[in-house]
Image 1 (cartoon, rainbow, N blue to C red):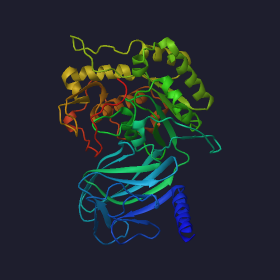
Image 2: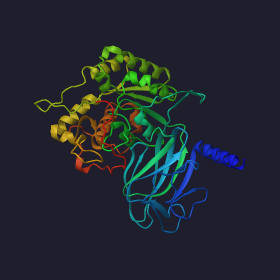
Image 3: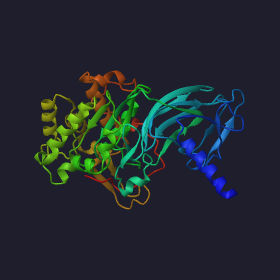
Length: 440
């Protein structure tokens, strides 16, 4: 009986913690700021506690004295991941980064390598406070009263993803990541962009794969707008419905939120034409979004890396981009023509340099990769970053309502002059896989 009571108390405490929406963590050694939960190098994730590091190997704390919150920090020579059991929703996360007696360099990504902060450097003795805003999701579909009414039908490979695991996971990466504190608080008012699409949009968990969707958060101001990426590899418009992914969004999206829709690659591959349900479903989604007070935005599918003898991109997407352009006009909704922008971008790169934006790597570049990777559909982080800038450029150039949320990280990108790949900053995560995503 005594054991049962003890187990019940642990379960209740764990459940209560997972329902919290405000947390204060002091990273470092023995000295702890009042009102904060202490986190030290041995704080391995514990389901009963509901927080901790995914892997504690290599973690170390440094205490420089002085302020209890900012005078010490945790660091590692490799990327490290901190997870918290937390209800789904939108959260502001306040981070104190730096070293009161040294320098630091930190890149922060969340969940499946979603880029949030890039190459944050602090000078000798400097501590910086950065706020990020993150969307956390689970696979349960709830109605407006919070009642469970269904579930998203996840693919087997998705069960390993960090964005369906009922946790918020923060990745601290770069040459000298030094974390003093993490404060998490629910944000009930932030506008949300819901992304729908396929492997070219999804938050890809494994290096070297990436998509524009997981780079997009970097270009928007925190606290006011957040990216909620619901895209998944291999999906068509129909499959997105059949697996109840869109039902999940319909039960979460609010008036004033945005719904980005990019499908075409797999719809085409499935043997469909634009007349076999594609147009009909697009129009139904647009109508539903408008009925809910949300703002639909159509995104044409980007080109594949297929060039003709004159080094011009060949359209391999049939009439899917044109169909989306026509529907945008008919339904009077905003259109981001990523198809046209990617054509400009890839032609500016040229056939050979464009390989540097796609998953083209010689054998043994990644673990268990015995053969060369030569994928002309899927992108590496550099290519994904360039495409995300194309998306932002379209928002800015068209003066769409989202323009007011664009951050200073966006620097008037010109697809005719791609960024130098050698200057692209992307410290790799620990998750790597040579298996290509679903879809083509």
